[in-house]
Length: 477
Image (cartoon, rainbow, N blue to C red; front, side, top):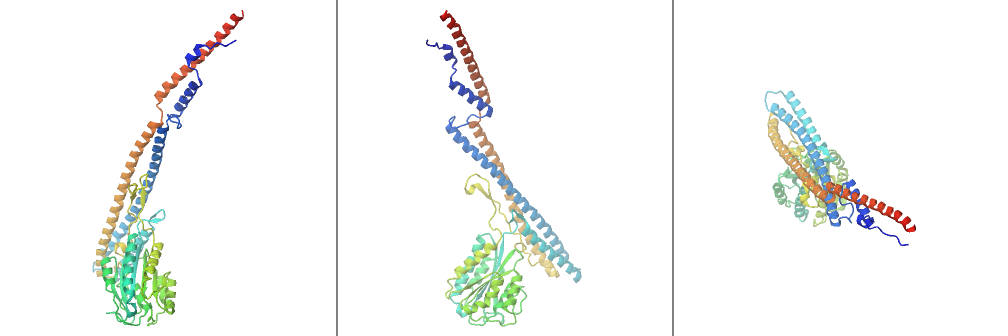
């Protein structure tokens, strides 16, 4: 006998689809989401995923900004200590500028000033964040010693160009650079007959002065030279002979790379004094110098082997035309940069894309070494020294204040960038929520309706079953 299907089943709508709809509604309500899978809203899920990814990236950007702020705080703390040391140094200079002090008392001031200068240099070098220096951009002092004998006619113009190129390269890499130029030949005007050197321009950051000195290099004739005394004189180490010593070429402090570049064919080099290659090597190495030298004649390489080895420098064979000076100077630049502290400014990824507008330069590290401050050779030994120190320290405060204003401006920019990212992130999260999250009021109403329909269907089923039970006995009877 064919079963009779009750119309109540159909009217109640109790179908597998209805059960699935209720299950989905309850799951969305429990999770508080509207779109749990792509089938629910393919386009909406794609947009919501992109917005969620952006929000997560922005949270990391905020952490980057916090790290940048911390780096600036460390730098500011170091600069406050530098300020304190400079103020004490100026107080000592003020005391030393008075003629009422005895020589012994003046010596006390000079000793303390020397100690404070060393401490300032140590503070600058040790102020770091994540191992990177914040107050030392890296600095280099380069003294070019150019042989101006007749055999160097082809090499001199190349040497002049390449030293300028080296300086410009190091400046572009963020190093503080001072350069000086000396011509080396016993016939050089005003040069000492023993060492044969004459300083054309002392170490300075004046680019125009260096270029003028390089342009003035020209062949002055033949002559025998003493390379050892030249190197010691021009390095500022107490010279054994000569007139161009430490009073004219003060190299920087411990944070500064000290470079001597000796461009010569070495054809007529000889030791004209009692100083030896070994003694020169020891003195230069202990004072922190590196020596780069050239030679045309293989047998004269031994003249500089010990010096370049002891100072971790380079010795290169010089082409007669000077054409390979370019390669030599490139190698010198590579070596200097390799030994330098960080030279690139800190950049903070404040945006979520790879563009220049999504990165912020903090303009640190800043250079506050004693050389950058102009107080590397500060002395209070005499009244005139103390008065000169006042002027030098006033200049140091100008450098410090500029650095602090630069760092302070970077902090304000980071703070503004952080506020902007927070606002954007809130808007992005709101947009993602509108797409992905559920309307709880609507889901509550919908789930209530679907539960009612399910319960109605169940009742209808029960009633239909009862009708079947009642009808069967009647048919059988």
